Structure formats: C-alpha cells, structure tokens
Amino acid sequence: MTEVAERPTSTTLSGTGLLALLLCAALPILDFFIVNVALPSMGRELRAGPALLELVVAGYGVAFAVLLVLGGRLGDTFGRRRLLLIAMTAFTVSSIACGLAPNAPVLVAARILQGASAALLNPQVLATLHATTSGDRRNRALSLYGAMAGLAMVAGQILGGLLVAADLGGSGWRAVFLVNGPVGLIAFVLAWRTVPATRSDRPAPVDLAGTVLLAVTLTALLVPLSEGRAAGWPLWSWLCLAVCPIAAITLLRVERRQERAGRLPLLPPSLFSFSGVRLGLGLLVPFSINFGGFMFVMAIALQQALRFGPIQAGLTLAPLAVTHLLASLISPRLIGRFGSRVIQVASSIHLIALVVLGITVLRGWPNLTALDFAPALALWGVASGSQIPVFFRIVLADLPGDRAGVGSGVLVTFQQASLALGAAVIGTLFLSLETAQGDQGKALAETIAALVALVILTLTISTRLPRRL
Image (cartoon, rainbow, N blue to C red; front, side, top):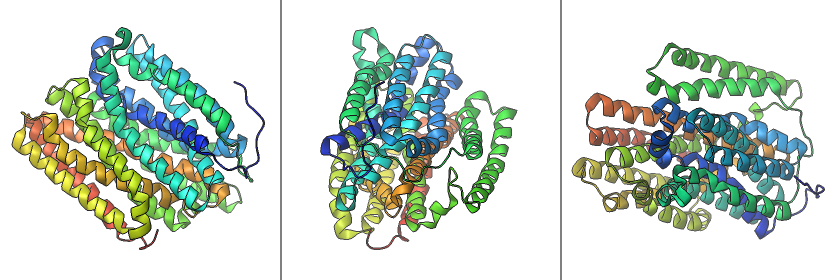
C-alpha cells in the first residue's frame, strides 16, 4: 500500500476528510451488529452449533476490545493516518475472508482477524478528530461521530437483514461480509486523499506488560460469558472468571508503577484524574451494556421466537434508526441550550420506552408484528440519539492533544467491551430464562426489566454532571 509523506499536525480537517473518518469508523461498529440477523443462516449452511455461532460474535468483540488501546498507542507513535490506511486494508481483506469461509472454524478465525484490524482502525478516527479540530468544530465533529456510532449499531442489523434476504448472486449470509470489499476500498481512497497525517508530539513505546494483562483481563471476562452457557458452563469458564479480577488488579498495579517511573503506560491511571473521563465512562458503560444486550436479544427474539424473516427482523428496528438519526442531529443544539439536562430527559425517555416495550410484549405475545414494536423502538431511538454523541464529547473534552490517541483508545475499549459484555450477559439471561420458564414472551419481559436497572444507573450518574457541558 502506498503511503504519502506525513503532513504537519497543524493541518485542519476538511469536510471530505471528516466524511472519510466517519466512514472508516462506521464499518467496525457496523460489523459488530450486522451478523446478528445472519446467524441462523450461517448455522444452517455451515452446520454450526450454538457455541461456534456465538464465537462468530464473541471472537470479533473480544479481539476488538483487547487491542483497541494498543491501536491508539501505535497511531500516536507511527502516525494515525498511516495506521488508519493499514488497518482499513486489513479490515477489508479479513472481511472478504469471512465472506469466503468454507466452514465455521475458518469463519471464526477470520472474524478474530477482522476484530483485530478494527481495533487498529477505530482509535485513529477519534484521535485524528481530536488533533485536527478545536472549539465548536471539534464539538460538531464529535457529535457527528457519536451520531454515526449509534446509527451504525442499529443500521447493522437492518442492513444485515436486507443483505441476507436479497441473497445477492446466491451469496446469502456471505454478503454481510463481502459488501465490505467495495465499501472498504472507497473508505481507503477517501482517507488517503483527504485525512491529515498526525501523530503524538511525545510518542511512547509499546507497553508490552500492559497489553498482555489487558488482553488476559478482557479475554478472561468476555469469552466465558459469551461461550459458557452454550458450552454448559464447563470448569474452564469458571477458572477464567476467577482469573479476571486477579489480572485486572495486576494490570492496575503495573500501570501505576510505570506511570510513577515516568513512562506512559497503556492505560494511564492519570487519565481518570480528568472528571470528564470518569463521568463520561460512567455514563457510557451502562448505556453500552444495555444497547449491546438489547440489540442481541431483539435479534434472537424476533427471528427464533416470533419467526420473523431476516428482512422483517431488520426492518422492525427501522423506527429506532430513524428517530436516533433525527435526535443525533439536533442534540448538539439541545446540549448548548439545556446542558446536562438533555441526558437526564433522554434517560427518562429511555425508561418510558422500556416500559412500553415490556407492556407490548406481555399483552401481545406471540402475535406481535413490526408495527406493535414501533412506538417503543421510536422512543428508544430518541433516547439513544440524544445521549451517545454527548458521551464522546464529555470523555474527550478536556484531554490534551498528546493524550488524544490513548484517550480515544480507552474510550472505545470501554464502549466495545461493554457492548460485548451486554450481548453476553443480557443474551445469556434471556436464553436462560427462556429455557427455565418455557415462555419466551415472559423471558423477554423479564429481560427488559433488567435493562431498566441499567437505565436507572445512567440516569443517576447523569445527575452528577455540571449544568453546562
């Protein structure tokens, strides 16, 4: 791949450059969700059981979450545009490998590579936005990024359903991966021509110990939670969960020791001295657990319980996508006028959406249609579209420019790990309740009740935000 010379870090980001960055950032997020509605088709064609199918989701999510902070550090050191282009190439190639996989084990391996390349790609976007914009331009760019991130989460399942149902050239589920070929090429060319080249003024060496400990911590948490139920909760799953807190405590001690010695660790504990980082992540984590779990459970409930086809299951979420987009576009103005009250009102709308959804399920199951879900999902979209852009602004608002890469990596790591954790924990809760009770509608309603607790947590934390953001 050809790379042009680095440009000065003072170069500002053009409108086309912003479009290129948003497209580069959308693909990894889209691909976390796009497979949900394609899983039944994959299972039938590849003759894969539940454990292997869950690895298709978990393998991507774990690799993505584990390597994100490292991706931010490498971009700081070697140049963010250079890493962006390399990662986009790897993401496109691994996506094609997923689409051509002859069996489930090969698909899982390709998904892990796809997740790893996404982890190198995503942090470069936020870091470049932070380094090439300032003031109102930065706020608008971060708002657009947040809007894109939320929309990609929803659009992934809608697009997945459309592609599987379209069966382009007889490709079936493979189209959800192969579509990344031409889209990835367009994103690469746009980024190569329009994105400024930036890097940290004080690049730090790779923190090998921190990288390994972070990988152990997240893998020991996410893999057993994703695979444990399908595998029957074997001994290895419990051993992994026991290792997780030990690895996390060791990681914290190692990172503190490195920072006290004057080195820049992978996860600098000093980042959490910024109130914006603490509050922003405190809001983002429960919201993302909620979002990841909700989208995964809805995909299962619509297709396996209500027997919706992939296109019907995807289009059921269309009201959520539309209202999310509209709310994302107006949320910057609302934040400017009403400040942190926007998050509190949005969380309240989120609670109402869940209550309406729960009542809809209890009253109408199993004779529900896409229109029955529309009111609750439309409210959900208003809530998510009003909040996600603000979370990113809060976390990155007061970070200095030379912390943009590592700060972006930490932010997206928490987001991605929380999405994966939500899919694993909330998905396991729903499937366990379904098995124990034999009543899918009641299981879904009780799962929705668990999501209410996460929204209440987000609402409670939002009361600690300053009035002006």
